[in-house]
Image 1 (cartoon, rainbow, N blue to C red):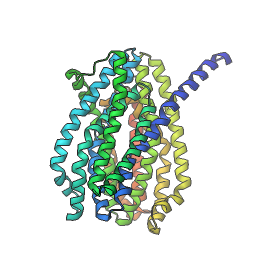
Image 2: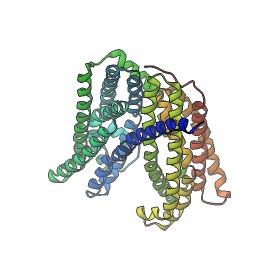
Image 3: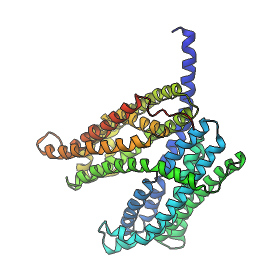
Length: 450
């Protein structure tokens, strides 16, 4: 190929790289901002006392699980909206997105009803003492009232990502967190409402954030003449498309629960170390997931426009971004592993064990980078059914490997928790890589058009 032939390709790659950065950087910052709702609650409630903080921990675990299973409202909506935009039908894209928001209202209403009625029972599953249970139930019952706006936020964020806009969700996330802090302080301490005040403050902040995002979407819908009334067929299609992504999410969360259960069998030091390691790993996952979100938006747009060749080129470039992100986060994690423990705990045993665990995690970060990107590519392509079955395969491969690691670890060199994390890298991340790369190498997922 001549030098003149290479310039357009380089120019196209630079343009694509700019698009990736334009989408990924605000997405990463918004992803980091999302957990701050509970973190700011924890910081404020922590000063009320240990029982209140323990109650928040239980309520937060229940709420995050319920909402986490509905992440398809963001991912699925991003893919469908981007694809329809790529096909040149902006009005249709907005109408599909609005259907996703109505689905969020429906699911959120059902969750609110079920959650408020069963809050006490859900808290009881954790076996807390009566004082902690009372605080957890109080917080959870009120927090479930904010599920509808929270799910609407997911759907509206998905619409905007599909429209190639990740900056607006970032601005709303930051403003919402600031409002959450102010409201929590005012209600918890100013009005002396205790843990209930924190739950009400978070609900109000989520309501305001949802209203802001919905206003942006409705303004765009009015501009394009798109209907904002619920369309039963459209809502049904959105729900049907979300089923596969729910299965995918369930299998991924089940794999993480296998890790937690395995760590729990190894004693208090291992549990504490594992909690810190998974917290660090989850934060790094935000960086990789931000690139995946860019992949969802760009691949959906490209396939909607009907270009398989462009989708292949975008995928190759995104994989390079994922690999590079994984290498950077892996090297950073390895370099910081000796000092990270000191930021979280004074327990020397936990700090010493955390170092080899984080080093094990660092080794498979480059593969994780590719996994996250390809996951985003296939979500953007609407290949949810394959991802669901792939998740089942990954869980089936990882669970026995984790059990085997714990079985042979006592006779091996090193702590069993390190072997468990090595099994996580090989069985979970590695198997996901095989499943996703196998799919991406073919063209069955490249369905074009709206």
